[in-house]
Image 1 (cartoon, rainbow, N blue to C red):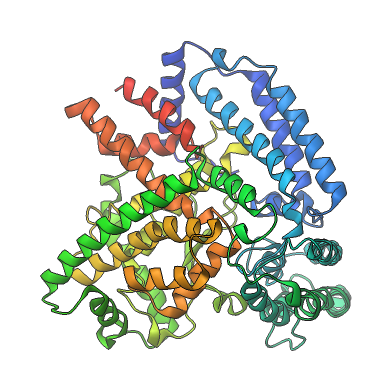
Image 2 (image 1 turned 90 degrees about the vertical axis):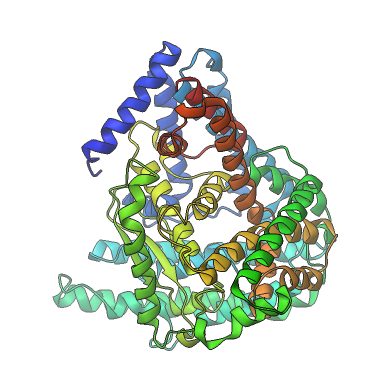
Length: 592
């Protein structure tokens, strides 16, 4: 593990001391051993997470996490640790340990509840699933290492396990067909070409062949030739056929039975499953209806701000006409090559760097890179994203940018400045990397667990754009508002789709009316919400909570309120459920 720079170490030490002083209690050593045991056992159950964390002990393994035997094992595991956790008196713990106690309890209880809904019968989607993740790993440009002969052999074993996972996925989906517990047809139609692309046998077209073409020079002689032959054999007899089996099953057997309904309310048990996802992702007890109404209010507020900016710009048409102008006028599409797009994001980073100290007193040590999205993922991505770096610092955090056509990349429509602040710095890269580097946290907490906190922080950071030297012209200000309203609209459309208030087409139309978005991107967005129910709620719910807390402490502390200390405190104990966050921040405010 990389050693933390002294500034971060001192910051974390002071936070730890503050907790001890406030509560008069020391760290509970036995409880921390429980935390560590939980983490180590969880890596064995989820070896791909270990690989992404930079722990390469299990690189040859892949859990069949949608099988009945795995579910039984996972249930026993969760119940065991809940029982062990119950042996500690939460009230006697210091502040930091109390947060970790609450975090682990939340994780275990939500895992157990999920099992009631048999989500293993919906094992894949077009946006985020194991087949897509394996496609990334197998490209050689992700967390799976391809540096030694052993690395390649590990991959061969993992591929064999993945082939078995594919067969389980097909079996599970087939079992659920008779009950109607199936995916929407429009999503299935998006997955078929994805799987066919990953089954492509042409070595020049399929990124899964890249580790073969990029074999390190250190692997040489007869061993090199043997590995090449083994690699081709594994791909052609196991991995590519597994993807083809899945593509064929989806096309020929599953698609005819897929549902025409857009959301979970259209399948058996879907209403209860969606209520679970709302609790799981928002980490609150807010109902879908409450969230829907919040979304309506936020959309109305942001649209009013957009109207004001439109007037300032001198545009005389309607707001919808202004959206079209911003989206289609060539002045907002200045790029000719993918390299120019990447460089534009680098320039935003250069602009922000000198001002970061005005918002946070610490920065992570983790490396950071800006990269173009891999070809097989590019078509399904409707915007940049962040890939978490490894906990040991060996793999950087990566800001991935899709550039299917550089000449169509729109600086306003994308809200490039706000997007970089959110996905990269000081959004995801800062929050996640500081959490990974925080040695005062139990190991299991150094990895992110709660989207409402992580995405809430990233969207909250977008509101700091002016302080970071961005949003200096109306197009970028509109881009920032467009990013924000996109997240507010999610509260309306996600709930609308999955509770039956909206059809897919109505949700798409709602987006087109209220934000500057192309129909193609509106379709991609709505289909993402269909694929991952509830996840899209996390951004606005988390941001609104952080804004509420900031205002609460600003009023409470008056001249003693310091924005840098507030931000430092938000990140000092890692991510946590929103219902835990306020208790923690109340303790922080009391010490100011």
